[in-house]
Amino acid sequence: MSVFLFVGVKTAMKINEVGRISVYRAYQQQTEQRTGSAAGKRRKDEVAFSAEALELLKARKSMDDPERMKRIEQLKAEVSAGTYRVDTAKLAEKIAPFVYPYFLNRD
Image 1 (cartoon, rainbow, N blue to C red):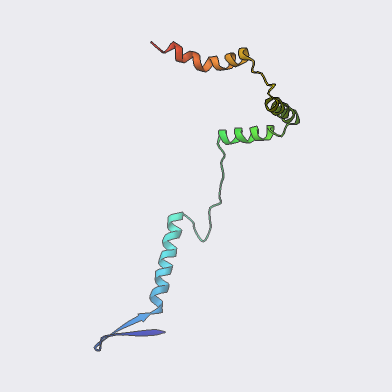
Image 2 (tube, rainbow, N blue to C red):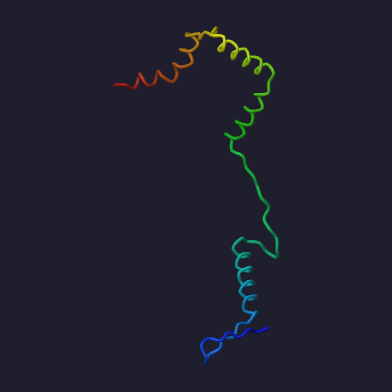
């Protein structure tokens, strides 16, 4: 099928449907070459999890531990009631490895 487009009085321009199909095929071939697919084969998707993601997943699973949940509820109750007391010796022991290097490098 051809369509004639008249511009002005003296000129006509012919538009062929075949031109559009060949452009589409060229685009398709170029896309296949770029992706490396041959004869319609497509690469399969792959997923790789980082070590940090796996560690987070493991930590999330440990949150379902009934003993842990019981301890958390106990701490919440103590904090709400105002009876929770911080063991300052344990706190200092846990903080010391992070703070101590700061004091060593204060020259």
